[in-house]
Length: 381
Image 1 (spheres, rainbow, N blue to C red):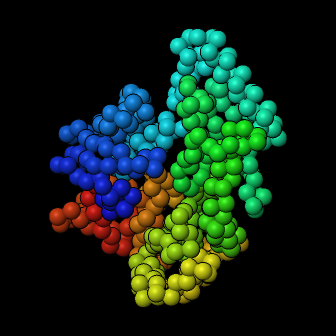
Image 2 (tube, one colour; image 1 turned 180 degrees about the vertical axis):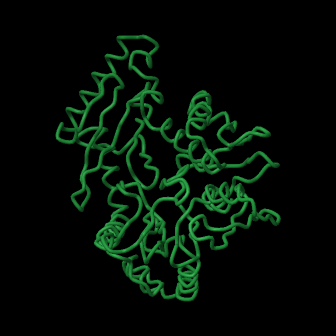
Image 3 (cartoon, rainbow, N blue to C red; image 1 turned 30 degrees about the vertical axis):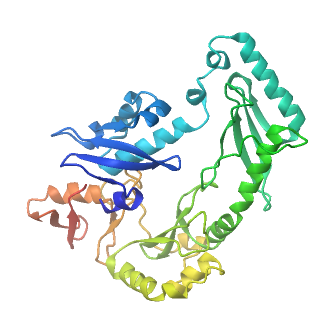
């Protein structure tokens, strides 16, 4: 429940088996209602969305099939499947553009061929050096540009029916939603060159963010993401045995104090929370984020080479997997000699099945499956 409120604060309980409110999708709040059938699990939940979102993502039958296949155990898992499904549907692609070009023009071959010809002509004017690929069946092209650091980025451009009066649809792996100004200012290399110029300007806007993240990747043992992309603003770094901190940088203000989520046994993360609270006033947004972070928490992040010598249990000690419904193990045994990590959902199912389990309101009292150290877990939302 706490994680759900952190990520989607406008989504609230609506009775015992439902949540209603707003979920952030594609840079905008979308109205949703999620209902779990009585006596059933969240894998069978029914998701109701606003008419605008329904028109964008199409029939929800495929969404519900996806939720069932994922075997979601929590409402957070359902929300994650909804967000990922909707974001994929909102990207320029076969579903979003109506599939084949002829279908988009109501079966009019002549209109489709004319638009395909216009795309090729505009790419000629732009220059083929800036073109990574062309998909004439979708009247789309993938353009490429380099930022000031020399990193190559790709921008997918789809010409809609009504172009150039209507703006092209664009998609790129960026930490914030990229929207173009249309119609663009006149450019000697055509309209697509103007779009690419706006894209390059957007790349430069994120250089501070990417510079901070590169420094973290180079100097720290990063648990996740394992293969970061330009749109990822989160890094989970190791600061000690079975202790890590998940940093979420603000893509618009990357130098500010990031959101910090501490993961590990309380005897190690408790002092870190205290130092953050006491020393946060020392944060200097002109310094590198990593230097600030280590100074404020009075800790040094472990380097990548530490993977060979430091004990760190990545997988859940119950299901033996790392991610469950997109959630990493967040509960850790308090015994320093054990320090096994567990998904809260797995720990709940285990403790609930213990013969000696005790319950007080929404909290279950049990013990670690490895060392019998007392553990508590709250009823999952």
